[in-house]
Image (cartoon, rainbow, N blue to C red; front, side, top):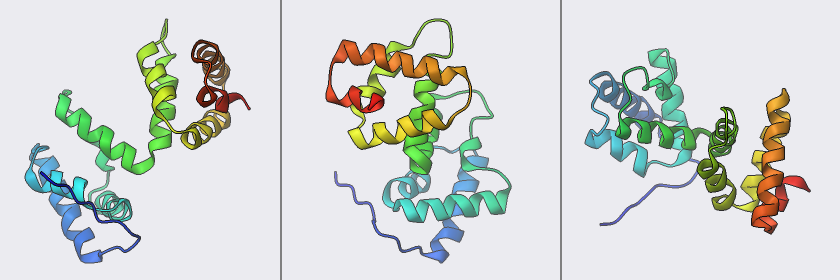
Length: 162
């Protein structure tokens, strides 16, 4: 089994048009595991995918991430997560961190997973996203990071507080 993803900043406008329609048809027919749907998401560059997602939104009136309107299915949730990470992975991880402490108690698994698995640069960018938000939740989130900092005692966690 091999995988190949095109890289670069070139955008093929013909592919943007046709693949936006392919994605729309697959979503409309609820064929989330359609071969072409998966092929597009796994072989196109981020630049090409962003152009395709924009065309999808322009042509069909809603974002491709809006595939969650029906009852949840694990595969559909995974696809939606992949698409959100293609859009902006730092914003996605910031949301996971926010949601991990939103309810009574803390989702320690989610909080730990993001802090431990993200590179130092990503953590700095996520910290900036958190700091830019308004409201008391930011303080609580930063406090949670401080608690984890003392638990893990790593340079990775100290990135959040320098």
